[in-house]
Amino acid sequence: MNSKRTPEISTVIIVNKSSQLSKTLQIKTRHISRLKYYVYGVLALIITLAGSVIYLRSQNQEQEAEKNKLLAQITKLKGEIPPPVTLQQNPNSAQSYIQSIEGKLQSINSYLKKRGLKGFSTKAVGGSTEAPKLSDKETYSLYDEYLNRLVRTVAFIPMGYPRISSITSVFGYRSDPFDMAHAEFHPGIDFKGNKGDDAKCTANGKVVFAGRYGGYGNCVRIAHSNNFETLYGHLSKITVKVGQEVTVGEKIGKIGSTGRSTGNHLHYEIRKNGKPINPRSFLTLNN
Image 1 (cartoon, rainbow, N blue to C red):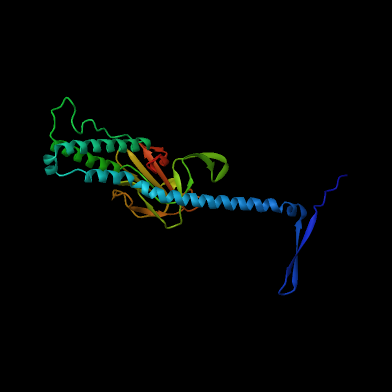
Image 2 (cartoon, one colour):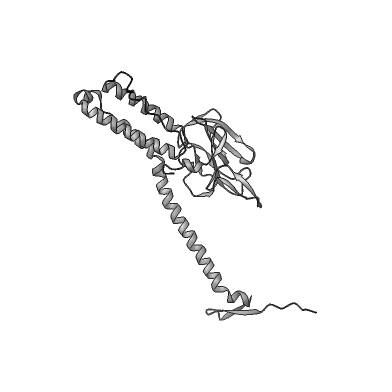
């Protein structure tokens, strides 16, 4: 007959010098022999977490600047258009200004295409070779109107962050947080947050839904131009109403953990023609 082997036990004596009292603690010997490995593991975890915090902090500082880069560039373009009197006095400078604007518009198109967005056509802005030649004043008027349309369009395309914080879950398939043995499709991005933190919209638009929405809990959906829609889920409080017009950066609710959620966070989705697309492509200008 085989008998069960009794685990080896070691006794650790803890001495308190001030009270001259001591305590004993019994620990399995194998744990003591592995103590240094436990220490190395804990140190590695601390170093990894510290590195992640430093990286995310630096990323967050850059992201705020990147969010406004495109609109700032467009504003700068509009400011560079000289008054008509200058064009009449110096026609040569007019052409150089037009060429400069065209180059910068191409840069803006490049930014948009990298984000998965359709670029803006500039072929008809200054007239074609077949059309009658336009005066400098007429050309500048067309560019000014075009830039105004561009600003309005960009304002209604979801860009940037609904909350500046670290990302806790990304778009795509992942383990089901309620059943780790199964996978589920996550149609958005989760941002870390505390209950009551502000959630802000990422583009101008109109609130089309505000209330309980299945597993999303308290949810806000906002319709934008070009068939875009953004969704903000698991809110603890909703601060907008259906039909309300909202602008970029406006608070639409407070972060919470309502619906199918394991803790306080903000679930954020971008939908195109009703289908979820990866929001990461719209977070910065450099994707």
